[in-house]
Image 1 (cartoon, rainbow, N blue to C red):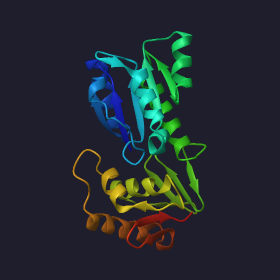
Image 2 (image 1 turned 180 degrees about the vertical axis):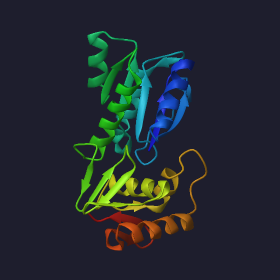
Image 3 (image 1 turned 30 degrees about the vertical axis):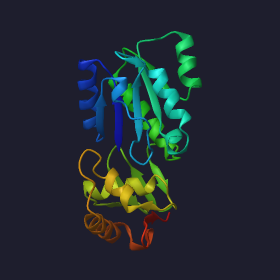
Length: 221
């Protein structure tokens, strides 16, 4: 999963990127409001960590712009990370569309827990064990079970399964998968995706992943 970090503090930014990497999350780090994307898309970004006080603008303005765009942008979880602790700021952030509000200084472990919580909610899962029919997926442990049997899937296969599991029963296009499976590089080749899907089917059960010809794949759970 991919995180957009907007934070101007060098030490904190480096520390958060390192912590996200250990957690198995990829990230892009920006330090100025002007560098932030005009919109955020739920097919490209899983969560935004947003500082409110940036050297060239306000995080509140970015929050308002993204939430007002509607569509996929309205679905991206946004966690405010800020030194501003006044009740008025908390209310403005949460009422403005933030999913969580974390005041600096904070424990990195707590922030990671909050990230996991908003990602679970966006996938409509109540706990860290994602239960989808016979499948149980544990994102933090990179573990998969079917009917209680632990399945041996590669990191790339696990990433693919997690992307399909975010919207079980919904078609995820190959173009979206290509971008999300390698968010920091060139989109993955469709042929490579087909190979990973084939391998994953063999391990979890071919009937669980259906091909929608000319579009993509869906997880049947």
